[in-house]
Length: 169
View 1: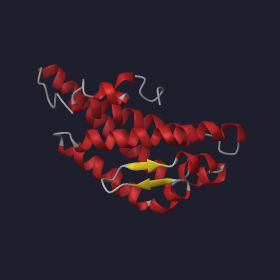
View 2: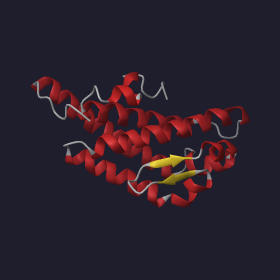
View 3: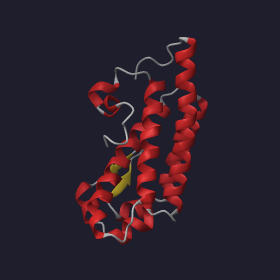
């Protein structure tokens, strides 16, 4: 997960998140989600040596997804709230496939991963959900890119104007 939060590693730590504005967290979270989706799209699922790395990336994706839902849902930006809804709708569309690898959807739209089940998922099953040609990953990649762009604009606008948008979580 550290690689996905390379811009601000403290944003991934629950103990440090309260030190950042919702606007900044939305930017860091959506960028991390975009990076995780991109990584999953680009794996070679036929290479058995990658399977442990893929599983680790899936676990990181769940965390970055949940952080993105949280920060976007709490944002004052209507576009960020819309992206959070899109993410929840996308996950809901793939409920069965996610459950097949041990990921369930909570009532609030966040994801919960059963690490033991994720570890048992084979490369073919992971590829069918997260591979480059899959609609789930492609849609996740697209929405997270849009979220990142929108939150980037919101964040830098708040810096330029000196406004303290959403100072606390």
